[in-house]
Length: 444
Image (cartoon, rainbow, N blue to C red; front, side):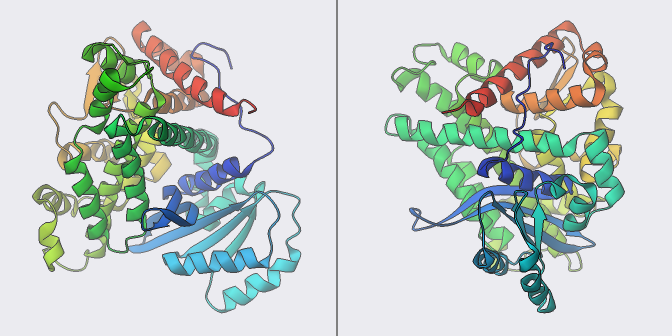
C-alpha cells in the first residue's frame, strides 16, 4: 500500500490482552451485532466489581439476542468457564464465548461444556485463529454465513473493526489520563469522564426506558460538551496546546485538524451516547411491537416528548431493529462520511455491513436529525471536497473510513473520485489516525 493517504499500523501477529478483546468485539460487529466493550460495573461509583470485555446485541426474528465475549490471552481453567457462565446468567445473555489464544489444550473442557449445554446454557470456546473464519462468526452470531463471507472478503469488516476498537480504546485512554491531570481545572474533562461512567452504568440497567432517561438527563445537563471543553482548555489549562488561542483558532485546531486527544475522545463519546439513546428507542419499539405503542407507566411520561414522538415515527419503518447497528457502523466502521460521487456504492457497502438495502441506509442516516435536531442538520456537504460529512466525528475515527475505502477500492479508484481538497482531507485524517495508533504501538 502506498503512502498517498498516510501509513497504516499493522495489527500485531501475537495478540496481547487488549488486541484479543478487539478481535472478540470485531467478531460480533462482523456478525451484524451492536457492540459494547470494556464495560465496567462499579459499586458506589468507586469500587470496580466487574469488566465486560465485549457484548453484542441484536433482534433476531423479533426476539432479543445477545452474546457475551470474554477474552483470555493467558492461562485459564475450568473456574474461568464457570465465571463466564455466571456473567452470562447475570446479564441475561443468549450465549457466551471464551476467546483464547492458540496453543491452549481445550479437549478436557468439552465435557464441562456438554454439561452446560444439557442444562440449557450455551457456552462456546473459540480459538483466536478460528475467530477469523466466516463459519465461526456466522454460527456464534446466528447470522447468514454468505453475508458474513461477503463482509470479510468484500468490505474487510473484521480487519476494519479491529482497527476501530483499537482506536476507540486509545482515545478513551487519553480522556481518562487527561481527566486525571486537568480535572481540577477543566470541569468539562470531569464531565466527559462522568459520561463514560454513565454509559457503563446504563449498560447494566435492565429497562431501556431507564437507560434513555439517564442518558437524556446527562445530555440536557451537559449540552455541547465538546465545545465547552475546547473553550475551557484554551482559557484555563496550563501548558495545553490550546492555551492562548482564540476561540476560532482552538475550534479549528480540534474540529478540523484533530488536535488534543481528550477533545477527540469527547467528540466520540457524545456520538456513542447518541447511538445508545437511539438503541434504547429501537429496543422499546421492538418490545412493544405486538402491543399498541402508548405510555403505560409513569416513567413513560418522564421521557422527553421528542423521544416518544421519534419512537412512534420509527415504529412503522422496515428493519428498524438495525438502526443502532447502522449508526455504529457508519461512525466507527466507516468514519462518518460518504463519498458523493460513488454514493450508491457507499450505501450498498454500508448496507452489507448491517444487512440493509441501500435505500434503507439512506433513510436510516436521517434519523439523527429527527431524534437530535440541530440547526442545519447533522450532515454537511462540501462540493470542493466531494464528501458528505457527519459533524463532530474525530479525525482518527474518520481515518477508519479512509483506510477501509482504500482496501475496498484501491488508492487509485478511491482518490480518483475526490477533488484535490477531498484527497487533502483524507490525508489529514489518515495522519491523525496513524499518529494515534503509532504512539500506542511503540514499546513502552
